[in-house]
Length: 285
Image 1 (spheres, one colour):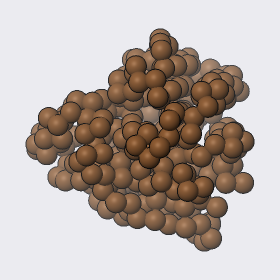
Image 2: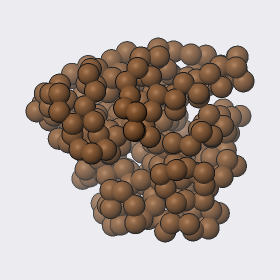
Image 3: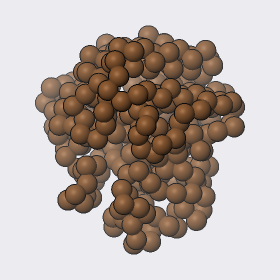
Image 4: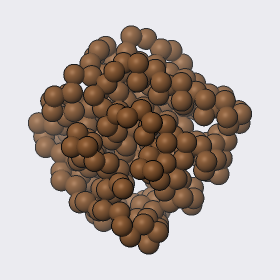
């Protein structure tokens, strides 16, 4: 059974207009706790400055403490640097559990996969999955895979890991869509752009193909940018996946036999608790 990595402090910052809101976690935490009382819960630590600086420029950390919005999608919140460090710490905890033969899912916010080495953008402040990938390398993994099935291209992750042949990154995402990147594959980066309102089974087939491509890399661990905004009911995208597809994603991850470290990225519908549950039940069996 999985361990849910969660801290209530991740629900304590918000903007009234913003879809990336505390209710995403509040509803999911309550639902999972009630529906799966046997699942374990773990509070994350903060990622250290050393862990963050493996990925981000020092000036970026300083910028996170300056009280000015980063862009129209990415507001400044008091203490957002600490909130982002805690989300990154949860991703690291997921890696540590995986390398001990356990399953841990990071149920935290803010998300991270749009944050580049030097810029916060797209609701993201620190790139938790990239920080966790470098932690896995430091922990002894020779090769690390990142499977990103969020509906938006993980441009920040690509920016950070591109050219690092210890890491293989695969993103399956809607195109055209924010941030407008992810149409070209090169070196260790593999992109599967999916047209809006396309066939859900073909979309899911691309997700599976991407995972198979990562498994061929023979990684020591598969990190997962688990975004649930490719769901047909999501208010932010135009994709067509249903609950059973996310259950399949979890099952496919389990079938690889590889340690897995999934972290929450996007997913803005009120069905997010059900989607997360489907993925986790598929993964944990």
